[in-house]
Length: 439
Image (cartoon, rainbow, N blue to C red; front, side, top):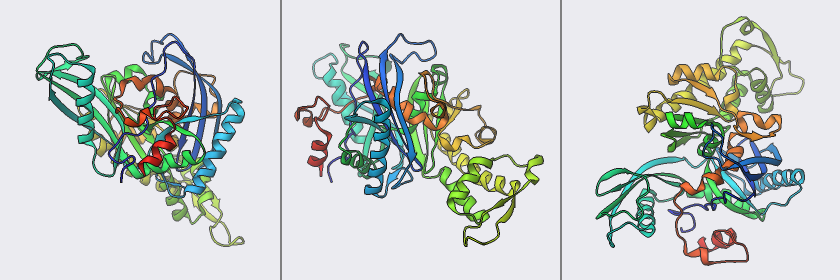
């Protein structure tokens, strides 16, 4: 099984500081598919977002109901392909451009980050770029288990003869050179099938990125990343976490529980159909119980026969059902954070993003369970975002638009397939060529 197995997913080239670029992002979620097309225009860095070299000007976007996806993974190729085509076509129509390649997020496939140390002897006395690439590649491959693929390989720091904290080792003299890196992996099958869907829409995958990492690029201020922060991206089918420390992305994890589980609990708990349960959740979903409106009664259509009498349910019943599941999700987040570098950051805060973070009272509940300051994250530093795209549920697709500005931080595997130029100047020539080779 070659292809993505134990290899790196496609990586984008860093954007040129001085040039305007057109980028498109695609977030294939369990409940919604969002496509955004933007112009990246060179701009002086702002104080709050120093890492950004470009302003993101949105020119087209769409969001439609997702089909053929469960827990962030494709379960029906044809259904998912249709939905992706529709989302991209709507965004293209609004932007009045045709898109050839897209940036793609990954939230399924059991995201996992690990810190890896790799070291090697230096042959020529001083460290060259080749040495850096060689050692980083070795470390990356070492960290990748069977059936997994690498989404990100981010060098965190370098060491020379055991002395850590070296920023840029190139040209420095040493006998031994080491690198500490953060390697984020996902199930190769999940990544490959997401690529396949996009591929079948005759689009190239410019790059793939972990959802919580790009959500962080959208919603975190530099100060938060510097002091330490965890971004909890709460989707419908999965909850994924990215931890930042000292201004850098240092850990990732995730699990397959999300907002859709709240909906299913409600459907079962009050005997409603899924569509009604989703509406009840959106309108009345709260994790706060007590208060005068808890005694309020409402009628809920029964899931069975058309002419069955509706049921009368109290707001308190609904809040209890929602709270139980939300507590479970935050308890799992707490356990994941305890196992990450975040645990050692006493001043670090938690920033929630994703559609499921918008239930009333989540901030209070998360603050109590995680015992940290918590806020809801919204896309920062975007000019002229339409109202519906300003919310936490657009953290991932907006973050993907920022991502090319941070691509230079990542290690990219040298690949023999890069020489396969097929008339495009993409990394892999046509990604399709690369995919077919791998099968």
